[in-house]
Image: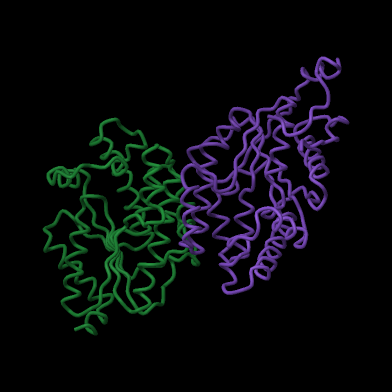
Length: 233
Length: 268
């Protein structure tokens, strides 16, 4: 696949900050948040200063997102831009400062979530990459890869209510929310697969037992940013 | 409601009556995106016209647009107004963020882009599809000018707005710094953002206004050359500016300017 970002793109350049940025990506139900939490505990047990950040709405755009969802105002483009605004806010206040202070930042979802989701909704894949030009390149990006059916099973057995936008109901792919989730998230999965080589994801088989996955996760940490862990200990 | 004095009763003058049936029907112009565009939005069936009025804060854009709107309606056109930061989706958010000074350069640019995208998909494109003359009170160029002054990465801002469509006409209400200051102080007064106080913290508001607005004017002049704006000397009285504005729009819409069109009388 053709390269969609140039060398000047933030995701293509080393950030050069004293801290390290670890990102976990994957669809809902992939178990990425669980793995991120365990990793955090492990790093902290080794006296590594960790800051954990999730992609929740910042106060800045929370109201707009709610208004948009309630009144059904959101289009693929405004949906994408609102998330980018959120991301920019989060990057400025929650990611960059701890990295400058030398901490390890674990981000539950990052710009790649937007690339996958927004492209699945129909925006231009090159445009959405351009929008995130200001992002910085993670030191490690884990992609927790899981088939749709497994993810769905996990979500449903945990009795989590599948949310309207998570299922991509706004795309009108199907009237049934479970079926729509399958169709929409499959598109997102396809995008993740395309991005794996584009951005050099560390792919973790998310159907494996939790402990097995965590061992793989820690190995990769030791290989690529092991000095940080050793320094902490 | 009309903003200008009527020039005679329709029944008084048979020529006026005849003019009722001479609504111009200019040919549609093909619309294009500035950049990568919206893959899910087809521009082929847009029959209307996008006319943008750009210029500094306080130059008199909204007065001119409201006069222009009434005039065009008298001519028989459907007119839709759309204004910067007035989107349903994030208009209130921008106001809040400005009040709380919660924005940085990135979120500033992104929120304004969201605002335009929302208005583009919910107002501008549907309006153009229905054959309206859409009057934009500021557009993408305002974002470019401000981004340049705030030293945002310009290439990024340009690609960000790749979803926007190119207007059919951009009229630039051009003033000098001094005239602008006199207008602003007498109407709305200096405010934090228009005085560019975020750019010049601790600075005297007058000094800051001059510094910020003259930088903006320089940027608008540069953009005017790049994008071929039609510049109108906005230092003149409202009526004269309106006539110049009408001339530009008349040329686009195949309207023949009559003597009446050149005599703007304001209701006091």
